[in-house]
Image (cartoon, helix red, strand yellow):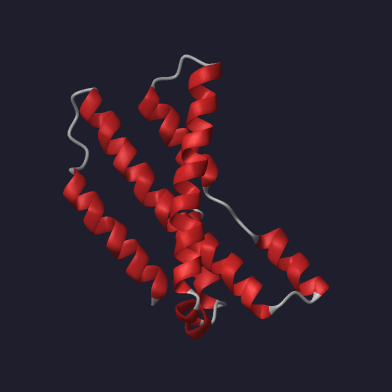
Length: 137
């Protein structure tokens, strides 16, 4: 419920030109970073609890979405370079989008495990590109 508002606020205050100039490092930090974090959290949950793999991955995806509000405030207070601020804000934006899509994929997988038909994987892939294009505009 709150995530769309937070994403809107982030995109509204982010310079699109600087975002596109830094898109490769931003995506490199956001997508593989979220996937790695999701895997680590799921691994810890699998070792520490009896939660099955897909729900553990879903919790990992949910916990991996970051909000850099405190970091950005500290950057502004310390006078950090503008590029660093753009990298962190952009990474958070795409990190959130990746977390939404990954959670959707995992929910579809969990639904398939219990015999329900939530979403097919092709529509989730289309959703991934819709979320990313909406974040970029």
